Length: 144
Image (cartoon, rainbow, N blue to C red; front, side, top):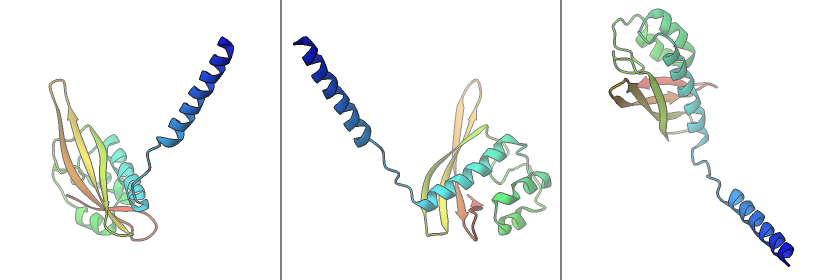
C-alpha cells in the first residue's frame, strides 16, 4: 500500500514540475529591432569600457565600426577630457543596457546606466543612446 502511494505522489510531483516548467516561461516582449539594437549598444560599450576611455583619435578609430559616419564626422578631431559616449570626464567603471523604445523598423533608443563604484559609494547616471540601421548593421547615431 505504501509503495502505491509513493508512486502516485511521485507522478503528481512530476506532473506539477512539468506544468510549472512549461507554464512559467517569461515571454520576450522586445521587438526584433530592440534586440538587434541592444546587441550593437552592448558591443560598443563593452569595447569602450575595456579600453582607454579618454577621447583620442585612436580610440575613435577603434569605435568607428559601431557608429554612423555622421557621428564619426562630428567627433573626428574633437579634443577634450569629456568622453562623448559617457558624457563625463569622470569615467565610469561599468554599464548596463536598460529599456528600449523602437521608433520604427530602423531606429531605436536605449537607456544605458553608467556605474561608478569605490570603497565608499556607488553612483549611477542614465544616458540615452539612439541607434539606427542605415544598411544591414545597427550603429550608434547619438548619445544624450
